[in-house]
Amino acid sequence: MIDPRRITLLNNCRDASGTVIYWMSRDQRVRHNWALLFARKKAEQLQQPLKVVFTLAPSFLNAPLRHYDFMLKGLQEVERALRKLNIPFYLVQGEPEIELPRFAREMKAGVVVTDFSPLKISREWKRRVGAQLPLPLYEVDAHNIVPCRIASGKQEYSARTLRPKINALLGEFLTGFPEPDRLDSPNDYPPVDWNTHFSRLKADHRVAPVTWLEPGETAAGACLDSFLQNRLCFYAKERNDPNSGALSNLSPYIHFGQISAQFIALQVSKTDAPEYDRAAFLEELIVRRELSENYCCYNNHYDSLEGIPSWARESLMKHAADYREYIYTPDEFEKGATHEPLWNAARHELVTTGKIHGYMRMYWAKKILEWSESPEQAFNTALFLNDRYALDGRDPNGYTGVAWSIGGVHDRPWFERPVYGKIRYMNASGCARKFDVRRYIARFEEKKSM
Ligand SMILES: Cc1cc2nc3c(=O)[nH]c(=O)nc-3n(C[C@H](O)[C@H](O)[C@H](O)COP(=O)(O)OP(=O)(O)OC[C@H]3O[C@@H](n4cnc5c(N)ncnc54)[C@H](O)[C@@H]3O)c2cc1C
View 1: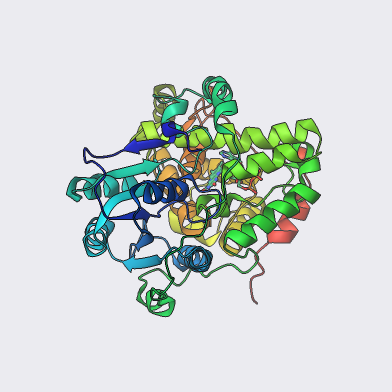
View 2 (view 1 turned 90 degrees about the vertical axis):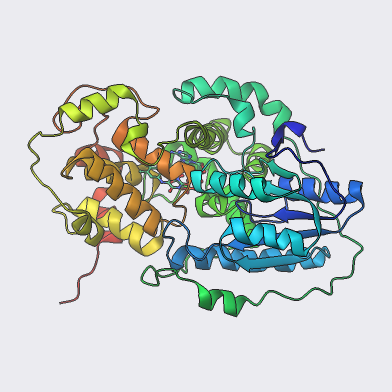
């Protein structure tokens, strides 16, 4: 049963007779996907065929090869899984506002369904597509457990204000999923020519794919199983220790929609891990993650310093001209050319693995604030590096994480100090109190060739 509160009609058109198209965008998976389930239901009600299409923009917010590789390999698995259900999958390359209406005309569509994202680029695509289509464009929030617009109709101040709203609705939305069933139609449609699509990409090849994390829905499920069996039971105690390996590593899968946060939450609730470990993990997965969705949905300036609260902006501006012991350019940050081995190790972790441990991520961003010429430059540098190298970059969590670290978003004013103003401060001795800093540096120190 799909809760109708997940669904928003984005234009004023009515269901017409013709193929039902699921324009898959953010939720790139076959199981546990409310948007696919809704499209399947529509096809059944209207007695029409169902087709799934992914529009591949030749460049997306400067995503490099690392990201395209992870995504396209995941989509190859989507194609195979859909074929088993007799649901045709198409990949069309080009700008969505041109390609999607063209595809809908070609397929004689009657209804188009898509999934939800609070990001501006995605909202703009949907606005343009919805305006051109003479058919209904439905958006289904398949990414959030409590649909973003239902959880709250405004920008929330902090986790403290969103948490009760989410908790009040969780019982209604944290439900199980039906399996998508097989269609009777013959699967005689052409396979996607992946080699051609890979070869046409305009992505930057200097940021290479990672090998330690396998992309796709199956690998995401295996990653979840390994976390539930081996690490969830010490998550609460050790999640702030980057050497302990307590984290789930699920963020790249969640980002590309290769696994559903709702499914993860259901599986976590079924384990016999201690209650405080489950609660600590679910706080991050549900409240903190959905708070980021809320921030991006209701604050149009989520990707710049303009979005931060006025107390933080005033305080940062007051300290903008403060003396800085070290100043690095964006290029020096990118190369890891700072004086501090701990920061350089975090940068090396990011560049080589496509991820920084959650605790080090805060430290990494705060030091960019401390050592940049201005808060604006710090914000832009942190966002640029996060999006360029982190596999889970370009995500509401990334925009909000940078805005939290550098701009006090969802945080409170702290004691005033140079450069930071009232933004929460972090330093290396604080890290040393939490974990073995030398061990972390030894793990991620860049070995410079002689
Ligand atoms: C400067 C900065 C940049 C960040 N950039 C990103 C980013 O680009 N993409 C991204 O997904 N997360 C980002 N985060 C949030 C967080 O650090 C990551 O979600 C987490 O490290 C992902 O690793 P994991 O899945 O192993 O985490 P786990 O601790 O196992 O958490 C499980 C899931 O909970 C959610 N989660 C955990 N911590 C947070 C948090 N602080 N805020 C919101 N959701 C959270 C994520 O969905 C995560 O996958 C950033 C945080 C900071 C401070």
